Image (tube, rainbow, N blue to C red; front, side, top):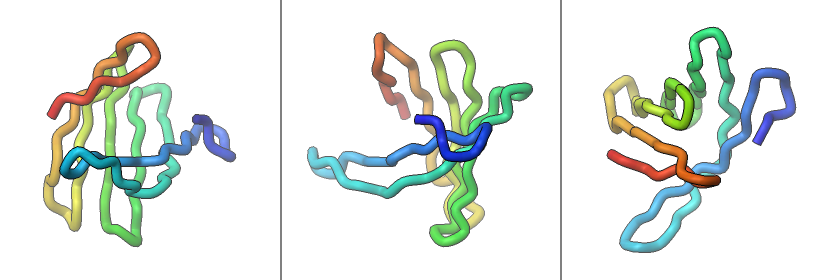
Length: 85
């Protein structure tokens, strides 16, 4: 959903571990419409999420403590995103 500041989006991040959904916490991303880049830098967790948004796809990376941790590809189907990684 849109964040409290212009050009920001508020995400509640979750993951599935052993078939159970776990909360990873909320993050406020900034969006650059000119480049289609959606990103956040979390100083506390030392992570950087960065996505390139194009049409119905989002492709991105997660860096943890300066190391590439995950490559993520999402495709929007109806009102949901399907995750591929």
